Image (cartoon, rainbow, N blue to C red; front, top):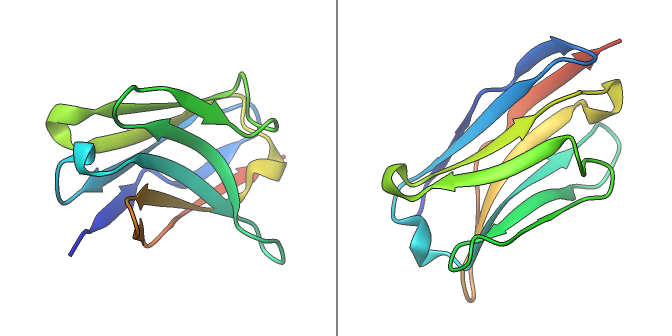
Length: 116
């Protein structure tokens, strides 16, 4: 059973930075993609950033382009989300996702709160 454990959330002022980590129980090469999603109160879960395990190619939501960076450390089976220039609208629970065929796995989520 795949386990994803997120860490690094917290409370930060607008303009600040946080780095989220997602540690996988197995090799991240076993996943097609890994990504970060977020869900704000009363809103649907949305994709924030995704990285393709084989190539390292990345994709971002328009709302975070230029501010967030997704990366991976294959030796540590860990994916990171560096979040800079945070805005109050970035406040949400952030979830790590790992996708294979046909399964998708989720972490438990980590709260990010950005105060104005």
